[in-house]
Length: 410
Image 1: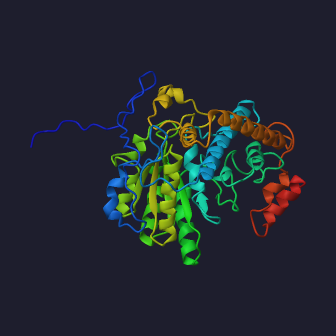
Image 2 (image 1 turned 90 degrees about the horizontal axis):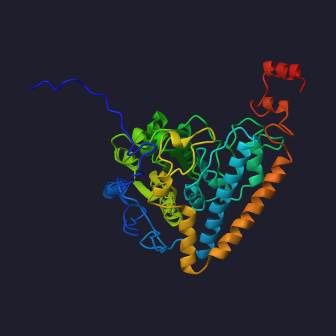
Image 3 (image 1 turned 45 degrees about the vertical axis):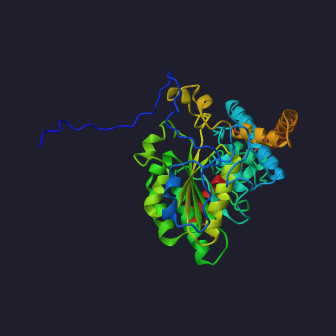
């Protein structure tokens, strides 16, 4: 056998670096309406190809076409548009507040609003999300007060989490929003465990796990798939592929699997890819996967193909690792614009009404911000009580903490 020479270490490279011309020629975009909608109880082995396609409903003309269309009324679509517009406006105001020093940290959802807003409307009360830090749309679409979200961001005296969590790491049991963890991927296996517990107790509530493309390289992601597939846990395993982790492109975490959805195939889990910038497609796929879980048919893995338009966080400068104009070249467009155009096409919306709605939403967000700031911000106004750090941790406070609380004079 001839000598193969020296071994070479392979490091995947993105298609283009800063200063180059954005290139998404490797992203195959199927025609809207071309991907079939299988029966809820389909044998996962017969739909393996769906892990490599992309389910789309809205075409370039703003029409809803194909077997995944027609699940939402005009009123529901208008409500969905307002949810996404509210999240985008909320983001802009909070990003500005961070730059003004009113909070230490913030993370935007720009370009990804459809994923969480549409998914939330497919769930039922009592279902539990185990989110990452870019699913605030789950709260906004469920009517959670923006003032409460802002109080948490400011860590002020009205912060429902008493300053214990990093800004934007919300928590609300009543709204099916499990406490966010900064240790990425931990929520994935927790979601599977919660779903298993729900089944063991003969409950009717299902769980939804959330993870970004980069974090699928964590061991918890794979452990979650083992348990979910083995015990047919009633859980939807969501992967938000926004093309970029903190500073590395999605190919680093994806490896040689081709798509993130394909990761589920080795576990016998039905796996789908959906246009994450298409509100109608996201909602339809979410309904399909949630129904499977509720019928005791086990988990479904869903990859949302989208794009992170903004920085990873307020501490990040994306110009250091990707072209500045890359978001403009993203072939799946803007989720807000696409739903707006669809509603205009249907004759239930207009550019004038959209402009008016933008002004109304901005006024609502500003009013909420003023109320939240009346309770304090990072460097001004009221703060959570020092006593709060000792409360709500143990059912019975141990002696050493009682002594520390006394020494602190609280």
